[in-house]
Length: 174
Image (cartoon, rainbow, N blue to C red; front, side):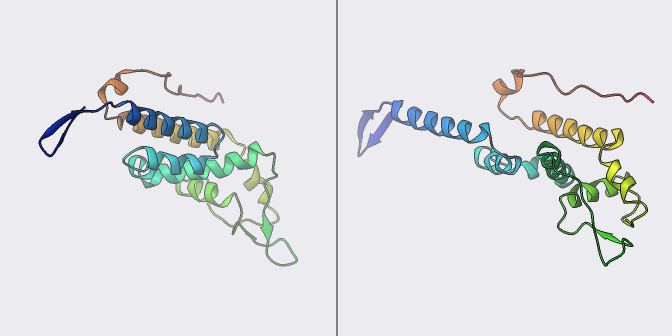
């Protein structure tokens, strides 16, 4: 690189800059290997000029966030639980429950019809989270996010390289 210092031209080696960038890339790669989804969201904003939420939009980002909550429950083998107010199971609440975010997204999508969860219907409410309809809803959201991310690539050489095929469409047999 040529550098002008008070009228004197210097030829500077770029190796120190390249080495620094490679070290940063190596650290980010190491941080992403076992990072939880929220950490990946944070790292995305540090690596790219826009945040993931800005690129995907509010709705898809909220779907992804809700899916992360649901994934954590399933991946760690935790039971889906619902707490009831009062001594008799007459009304349940999802406040501070890991199901709250997924349930809100599924309600917005029309998959959950209401939040009137009682001792008589809570088992159906819980079972819904294991249904094909819920799986497909979140899977299709991830497909949309994948599509948006691919379309957001602004560097032509990267855009022309295919790293992996897109997620396939899933069909459910009845």
